Image (cartoon, rainbow, N blue to C red):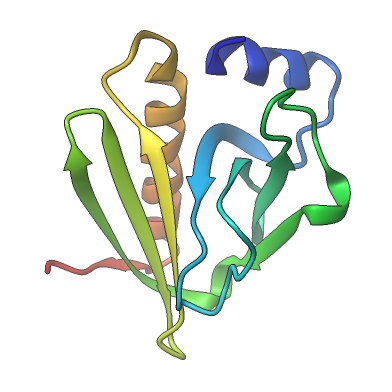
Length: 135
């Protein structure tokens, strides 16, 4: 199942917590926001939170007990960078110097919705006063 079909499936069953869903990948890092292993998530934005709904590795079913959320007031800056021609990384930084690296695919036929929704999420963050960091 491609990413577009996966998002539509969860939209029609009303299992997505927020708006503007995007299929993303998180890796364990030292940023102290996400400390589990590498996994796929469906990220969506609510009024006050970013929701991360865990997807199983092979079947892509939701695993609610592994979901988490990040309050938008914690996010102070962000950085968007190109990893390779098909992968980008959006890094969100908090005032406490914690960070979360959000990896997503780009320039793929089934990835347009994810790219558009992440751009929309960035725009919403900027409207809330979150600044872009140039590295």
